Length: 204
Length: 208
Image 1 (cartoon, chains in turn orange, green):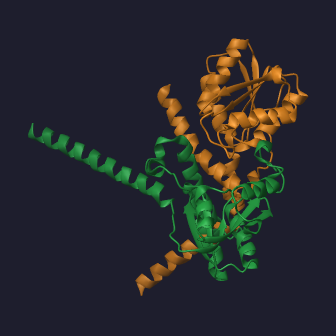
Image 2 (cartoon, one colour):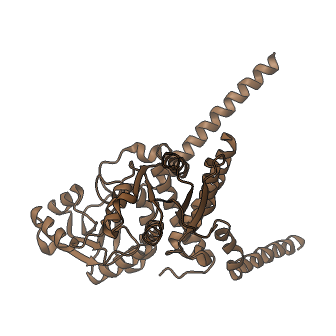
Image 3 (cartoon, chains in turn purple, red):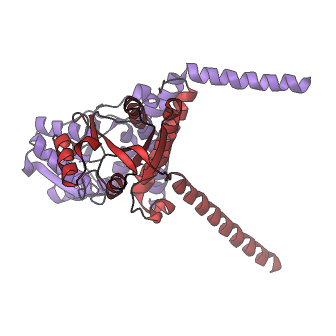
């Protein structure tokens, strides 16, 4: 009898937790996305940096380039990756897009990059070469915390001013778990963030 | 000294067994995603291109028709991907390959999510009164596709098969962790299935 009572109590507790989790899903799930989002205000700088990771961020960066007085836009992408267009890499696809959007060719810089860490190193290299002092790093909302951590690590001993800007685009941080793309993005960032954090701490 | 030898042997054995276990699990993670169903013949092949395999099935009478869905308009995607004349180009290509026009059924529909595709094809294939259909997908996507087809097609009585395109290297899924691209793609496939379960558990989304 006592055993049955105990089992009933355990079942009721689990059921109660489950009902609470369902009813208050917005309360406990929203912070997972909010933690990842960091936004600086955009200021006119020398360089706009964007990777070909998503079309949304590329569009935000392209619009900023059109409106601003920035000297250049650095576009980073992995030339090894395959796309639906046979033999064409994301960087090539981005090149076509810049032509379609009518972006000034003399303001564009394309560089091969395989990760966010390489993105940051390529950005630093270009900024040092050109003598730039400020850059706006454009990405998607969920990518911002990891992006900022990695860029700040790479630029830690430089006086370059970095701003981290995202465009909301098609992302839905308030209901991220209900949208397939948002869900995958948030979870991937939660996997990559601690991995990169450990990697950065280990390499100094 | 004896004790030290024991510890060394124990540590080496433990590391060896752990390595073997992790390797086995990692391989399983990759190979689980790959589905390649066997079939005799089907009414329709669902594919987005005329791959050699698709052509072979059509020419050998293993499939009667090809069903293709092409994007309606560029929406949140790189415009280079969007083929404005896809419809005409596909028909031209079919003609060139000697496939009769009536065997190629083209639908204009932008399908972003995998269950959207499953629902759309369920609707189309039901309208076409299909008894069976073969879906061709990228090898790492076959399990997810199988997963959503199972959830959709059981009720309509259409037998579905999933195959991946030929020419895949076993190392692509057996040693997926060697390539970052595959590691990311494989993770996405698991997350797609996880997404379904999370939303089912939280009663947030009606999938069908």
